[in-house]
Image (cartoon, rainbow, N blue to C red; front, top):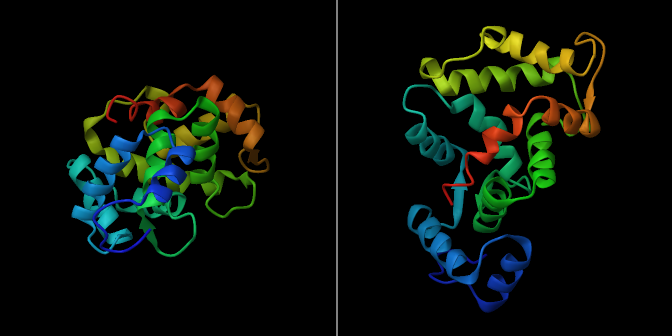
Amino acid sequence: MGKAVSKLTKDEIKQLRSATYFDKRELQQWYKGFMRDCPSGQLSEEEFVKVYKQFFPFGDPTDYCYYLFRVFDLDNSKYIDFKEFIIALSITSRGTEEQKINWSFRLYDYKKTGSITYNDLLPIISAVYKMIGPMVALPDDERTPENRTEKFFKLLGKDKDVDTLNLQDFKKLSKLDPSILNALNSYSGLV
């Protein structure tokens, strides 16, 4: 994507239409907004956190954004360009259940090992709790990040101290605990 360009080219639109669930008009609108907010064509992690702070004013999304930014930043450039942004937005807002599960797994598998340990999962769950703050009422068995993380392993009959979760386990888990996908499904009505 070119920097400080006011419109997407025909080729860029064609490429993004095949990679996302957005039509030409929507892509042009999102691009215009992205370039207005990020004139350089790149969204830094610091700017990304600022955006999330607007959505979570009663909590602190900084830690969560650290992990989330890495899922958006597909080329590991330390910036999110428009293509990376719109692909992530397309998956989280309009993607299939399978796409959303795979995307979520990438969030939790931030070490890119193909599996998630209890110690991998806990800091992300803790970051979510810190982000949502005290405004969300949680079930008794999920009052702490540790409880929530342990619950994931228990639902699958796994030992949190020994076992790991792979993508297949994560798919099973998302069926057993619908809140995993519900978090992403909340984006569906926004876009």
